[in-house]
Length: 152
Image: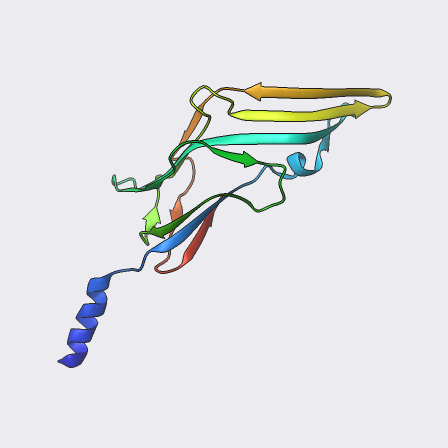
């Protein structure tokens, strides 16, 4: 009887919440530059991204943690580029992950760099203000009971 009582108490507690760490990647071409098909070498001195919102949810309609306000990410920083850490996330499968790039009409992406070929050298500095929502674009993320998960 005592064993049955202990087992029922353990089951009543349910899974322990976990931790989700969000990171961002610019990819090898942002970090190391690249060469175009016509021979220009392109390097970046600045690649700034504004993550407007990140949301965990389930396709059944359960809402999880979200970010509030824009989060600035410098994609030229050494990896891993920390975006946000969520503590006490309910342990389960979150299959309706969404995020946005943008800042309510402010700068969403800022890119600066240079390109060169032979004796030709050019610099560029571009800012984009388009807001873009990526909704249900990934397979989701699973937070293990009492454990940690990463999402990029």
